[in-house]
Image (cartoon, rainbow, N blue to C red; front, side):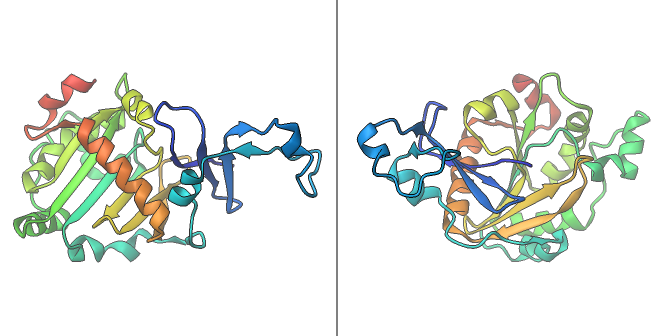
Length: 246
């Protein structure tokens, strides 16, 4: 089973923390174990298998989910949001590679030594150009490993076309992302209001997205965006500006 980081009130990387177990729709709480004998004797219906931990009230009020877990939806169900968002569409990319890239014709050309930095317009870049011309922001932060993976090198090589269309793409090392306690999953965040969290299989194939407006999940995504955006390296000139982070 997988474990998904939700949020923490710790600034130093220690407990307390909330996690979600997507397969069971349960929440896992990390905190200091309760050892006060006067408290332990007052616990009701405690089983030998149970452990009790202390967490700040702020952790629960900020991050505890306030709505039922969203159902997995096809990515196509959020396609309209890339045209209809009001001011910001922002993506966190955390994976070391994507099946959609490896299965593309562009990947084959790149593998053969072709230049994929200046691609012709396609529907995605056309929409980006239209939305950014209207004053909206398309932004991404991509995590980079050291050593950099083949999938990440492909995205670096193809980034100039998207940057030229108007996307602001930035890069952050995975080590720094872990220090910042960023989530370890991909998502799109629209207008600081709606979160679309990706689901992938072990072969990096997109299975769909979990869409939610739950305030706790949206808040955690906004905090991750702000931290990642602040620390990431800008790539206005394409690949060259990224060398400082790898």
